[in-house]
Length: 274
Ligand SMILES: N[C@@H](CCC[C@H](N)C(=O)O)C(=O)O
Image (cartoon, rainbow, N blue to C red; front, side, top):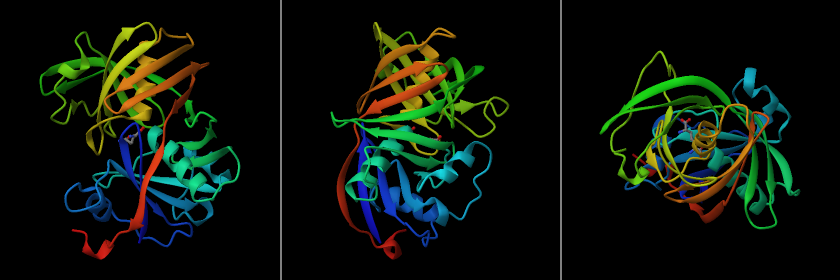
């Protein structure tokens, strides 16, 4: 099976080109591909499939994806399905560009959170219109070193973005955060963030379905939204362990800009994966 490997601020993905939807990608295969010792290693898988070949109903929030030629079928490293991935959609767009599957510098990508408009910027970054950012109210979690309190936010997928007083490097993210099922029936990605200068946040994340990653695009947007006074527009630079991205919040929606690179292409033996 052909594959590519790419990352956006070191949030890394195995990319599987499957234009005609012929691949039966089960959770065990995804987990084996993402295994960093016995597989290729990644935080998630991006299956590149034509929307018309997708064997899945696109209803509700996902319905606008029907108008897109290409669909990002996102899977977490543990094999679970997720609605959206902010770094993944940039890497997906870079793959489409480099594989010659799109000709324009601006186009839409289908996701389970709906169509997402992307722009390949002249400076090499990619900007994604991340859609509506929904503030759902307060929430809390228990981390390995104690409780954190924050804001429940949907960026298509669920987040708990928590402002902390200490440097984020000191927060213990070695264990899965304990969440309350009534607050997060589908689980959540948990961000800890701190404002380190005017308009600049530092952030770390524990991702649903993956553990701590070096960046999370939807998490970056969630942290920026949690850091912004209600009803205001804002622009943030968000530093994560794998680099930095920019978020512009405007009228309840967000644009995310950052790098996306393809670093390898090759063949993987699916039959050899455990
Ligand atoms: N890394 C992604 C988010 C991937 C999905 C997430 N783990 C979830 O289950 O919601 C990003 O860059 O947004």
